[in-house]
Length: 300
Image 1: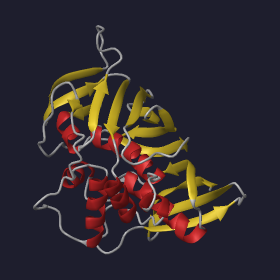
Image 2: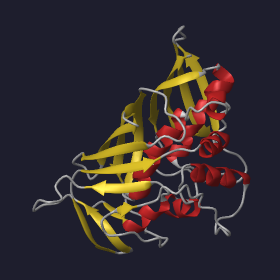
Image 3: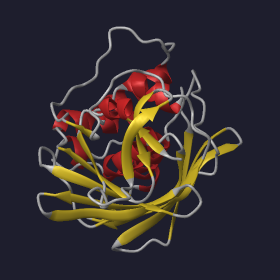
Image 4: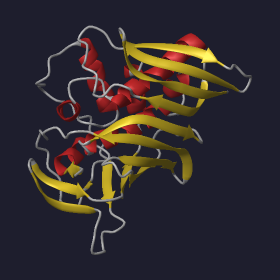
């Protein structure tokens, strides 16, 4: 049975709310109960998660620094990186539900999103009949549709829940204070890639060490998905609105963190047009491919 450990909700600085469409009926989809590691929300059907936040310019610039994206529209203008939007959509399901593993992302971007504006990510978890979920995604910013898409997940053996942050039994946590989750000491060994990942987590207002505890000391899929945008800019000159992102994650687990170097990114522009670029992307370490797919960029 899938479940959300309540302690994991406290890893987020954003406001997270878990909603059950059958919560007032005799057979609710989300049930608060005791689990092996503490209080959990047992998942017995479809449910919805709302993530409310606003991205500050400082957080946006920290994200593009960590993902090596030098596009000036994210540092000199007020446009949030499309990769940052996608990263939040990938990261939340895998942190919240230990038994789920994201295998693919399909997302269409409808409009620019801007710094310092109220934003809501909506995750509609639909059971697929095999212990996993298809997650329908929607991003709204002040009434405007920013992005829509879908995540495909598989069910995996749950890892022991560690940490101890706690949360209330209704699955609602009020973050929203812009907390950077700066830690005085870390139990994980320091190295340059690890610091990049920590800064990347902080830019998304997620507790870095808590996330390492949950996902493992490695590269989150959401981080791997953040890397192609910067490489597209450097090698392909693709500057504009990220219109579509389609990614697959063939590796069965979170790739272990290399203490020396970050993963390499290969991009290959195809189908050049005056109005858009389609760019193939491959994120790997040596012979092992972590992430593959393509992006479509509307030229500005």
